[in-house]
Amino acid sequence: MSTYLVLVASYSSSIYTLEFSTSPPTLKLLSSVEVGFHPSWITPHPSDASTVFAALEDERGKVAEVKFDETGKGTLVSTCESGGHSPCTILAAGQELIVGNYMSGNVVSIPLALSSPYISPKSSLTSLQLHGSGPNTNRQRSSHPHQVYKSPTRDELLIPDLGSDKTWRLVRGQNGWEITGSIEYSPGNGPRHVIEHDECLYTVLELHNTLSQHSLGPLLSSEKPSQTTTLPTHIPVPIPSQTIPLGMLAAEILLATTPSPFLYVSNRNDPSPGGDSIAIFSLSPSGLERIGEVKTGLHHLRGMILFGQDDKYLIAGGVNGGEGGVGVKVFERIDGGMGLKETILGEPMHQVTRDTGLPKSTQAVV
Image (cartoon, rainbow, N blue to C red; front, side):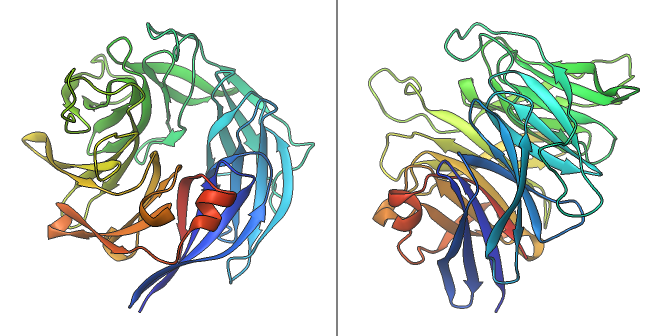
């Protein structure tokens, strides 16, 4: 039997600790720690496994440092300013935290101290302002960085900007991170999250519910990244207009490479029976192929992670709960990754979803 601690970020004021055991499959709430307004995204410290950082997503913009003991009980250690309005993405890499402030459209670097507390109210900030807009006047009046992603093969950051229909490419300059290029999408697509694999970039386009594939060569190459494939992230529901329902939006993207590469993309606000879905795509030399969709029973599905040996398990959180009041579910990858099977509903998670909750993102801690 294997046991995992799972941290759940939320739209409440707390981060929750769940315990998942594999035999028999059980999922239960262990504890929670209050850290501030809407700790909507979390990232682990690069070398201190006991520490995570959370983006507190409000107009005053803060970052929290939280330490967990071996039982999963958390303690708020310190906070600092995020340098902008509504931080919704955060990444700890090397000796810095990189924060994307959604509403103010800037990306901020915060140096990490050598020992805890790694951040403090006196932490210095370096800010890079993004600029751009798109045709969707409700969502794209200005730049909205939605993810900070570190390239696995280069010292480069990729910042999907929902507001400008671009993913910015950043490298280190004399004064911090600098924009040196971009990947462009069709107007109104709204890039949300990206993942890189085998010299290709895969982007979830939130506003058009599609997944795109781009070739991604060296930054200084004379050839610009080119789009090779675009596929829908969901099977259209049988409604009279035969169009995507207003507010039905793609969200998260995950990559599993064993035994062969597959992408998993979450969709939210599906009005059809069975709740929100996870779309599954295969990657091969012949290209990106959509091979199926699994209904989750969750509502407003956003955050997902893969965990366990060979990424055997996928855990997903529904902001508005799900069947039986359960807002978090664990699935097992089956058929070599081509399918997902729900493992356990777990104990009723109404403490997370009904009373205080709204799970948004998850992070497994082995």
